[in-house]
Length: 526
Image (cartoon, rainbow, N blue to C red; front, side):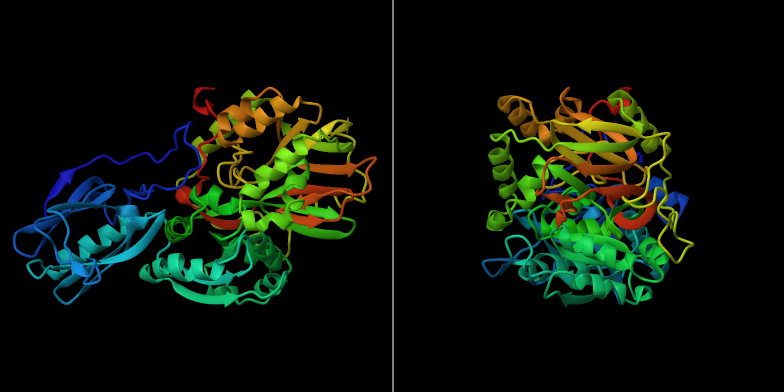
């Protein structure tokens, strides 16, 4: 084998990178520089195939050279078999599996098939001219660069909610996700849910040693049930730290998929799970009365809660129902008087950008297994008790908020496609991001603010958007008997509630071990 010098990417996201749908023509290869040896990490590796042809393993791509290498027989157009061009470049991120069977090297990769969809394609080449040792080394180098720190052959418990969002989740799973999982040699145990809350019991009783991840084919409601099912186990701490919760987006919002994989499309999310890195993840305990619930996505009162829960009858519209709901309620200029008690850690936007920069730059290159409860069988104790307990006198801010329009607290960057409410959020900084907006903002201005949610820089920096980093809060409604409170998109009683964050209690798969959103605009320059 011949070796040529290459340069490895640093893998740190640009400050102006949005959470986006992964390109259908080429998917970036996180940690593609990883390899079995220092030589493999720093060089291209070339393997002879067929007669005088070559395959070259580069830093981010697999280049197949020569005249039409043999392709799988199902690669056809109108039933006519076709080969590849004389030189074909396959992103390493798209490579799913490689193995040698006798004198034939078989490589399976995800090929774009239009409409943000990918299909597994099999490439077979003759490697009989190479020795067994050199071919095996090349294959291992390919797999190392294709997967980086991501675990290969993940073991998945797949839960499909056939009624999620606009429907069709079962078809999406079978057509656009399952083939990719199988091509990546993942083991799959699929189960269809039949009623709300069923996933709590399934995950509570699951043998967690049999799986690496629980995959929710649904909107954000099923991941909420999964986290809470794990949290109800007698070994909750161990279970939450061990099992990564992931999502195939089949609902209206799909905030988890958009945040972790940068996409709300099924095939792209499936690839994100296959290549996702084991990542510690903060969870939030929410209490109402004596009831404790785990939250992974958001806690919301006011405009956004009304726009979400108040449009359940519009689920057939998909994600568009949120925009309709926001517009309808902005025109009413409704206030939601409340008392807010906040444990604020950072409340200046420039300081928040500095904190984000420090967290990203100090992030360890390897996922660290286990969080604060990894060595505990139980959930961590509530530092501030429940909503029924008195709060500490020091370190808390009490705010009487008569003209509250939006109270939105989040643990992920994106609540739905192109809605970057919390660009400064990270998986494991031990803090929640809180956005509040007054109700007396002029309608035209409010519409402009909401329109800017698709641009994390413009929304974050808007002077009428109050953005804080907090570790706990208590929310008490006033002068209103009925309304909506949303926890991860699920309706809870309209009553006082309290929340506190548990650093690194949970586990997810994320590309490069961080969120797809590139952070608040200008964070590198502060």
